[in-house]
Length: 296
Ligand code: HEC
Ligand code: HEC
Image (cartoon, rainbow, N blue to C red):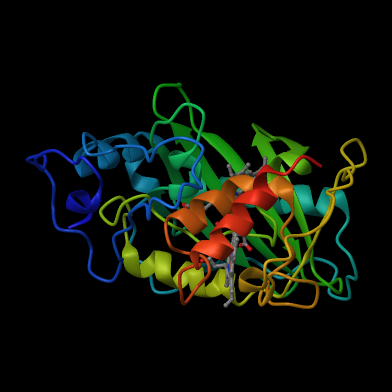
C-alpha cells in the first residue's frame, strides 16, 4: 500500500481505496538528493484528490477511452515543412477547446516532480491529455495547486515536420498564447515528461497513464523552440555521470542534462526512477551530488 511506504505515515484515512492495479507505489530512497525532506502526504486522501480534480468540470475528466491519444483533423497545408507560430498557437487553442468541450481523454494525477519539491509543498493537481495528427503531437496540461483559485492551461506542440522535431511550450491564457523558454526547459529537458504520480492511488486511470507514457517514450529526441524574447542562456557542461549519459547524451535516447535540470534530477533519482534499472552506487551518488552542488 502506497501510504504505508511513506516515512512517518499515520493511520490510513477512511476513504482510502486500494491503489489501482499496475501502478507501483513510490517512496523516497533517502538518497540525500532532495533539498527538502520528502513531503509527508499521509494526511491527503484519494477522496480529496477526486473532489478537487472534478472542480475543473466533472464531464471533462475520467472518461471511457479506447485510444489514449485523441486524433486531430489533418493539417490544412499538407506539404508543410515547419509550422509557423500562428499554426502552433491554433493547435494550442484547439486542444484547450477540445478539453473544455469534454472531447479529450485526460489522465488526472497529483504529480511527483511538481509536488515533491514545489515551493508551496502542497499537492499539485494535473489533467494531462495528448492529441495528434500527421504533422503535430500536441499535449495539454490543466493544472491547479491546492489553495489558489483557478486552473491553469499549458501546452506543448511537437512539430514533426522538422528534423529533429521542434517543441513549442506555452501557457494558454484565455485565447492568448504566451510562449516560454527556460521556465519550461528546466523540467522538460527532452520534451514531454512521463507521468509519475506522487502516490499510486493519486492517478485517475493507471492504464491510461501507462498508455500515455508509452506514447511519450516513443517520441524522437526533439529540439526546444526558445521564443525570441527568451533565448537559451549558456547552460554550461552537461552531466557526465556514465550511469546517466548511457541514455541522456547527445545522440542518445534522451537529451543531455544540465545544471538547470537539477530539480527533476533530484526528485527522479531520489524516488528511484533514475537510472532505470539499477540504483546508483554510493560513489556515483556522491559524484552526482558534487556536480549538482558545484559552483559554475
Ligand atoms: C517543476 C518542473 C516543471 C516545470 C518548470 C514545467 N513542467 Fe510541465 N510537467 C512537469 C511534469 C513533472 C509533468 C508530468 C506530470 C505528471 O506526472 O502528471 C509535466 C507535464 C506537462 C504537460 C503534459 C505533457 C507531458 O509532458 O506529460 C505539458 C503540456 C506541460 N507540462 C507544459 C509545461 C509548460 C508549457 C511549462 C512552462 C511554462 C512547463 N510545463 C513547466 C514538470 C514541469
Ligand atoms: C536506460 C536509460 C536511462 C538511464 C541510464 C537514465 N535515464 Fe533518465 N530517463 C530515461 C527515460 C526513458 C526517461 C523518460 C521516462 C521517464 O521519465 O520515466 C528519463 C527521464 C529522465 C528525466 C526527466 C527528463 C526527461 O528526459 O524526460 C530526468 C531528469 C532523468 N531521466 C535523469 C536521469 C539521471 C540523473 C540519470 C542517472 C542517474 C538517468 N536519468 C539515467 C532513461 C534513462
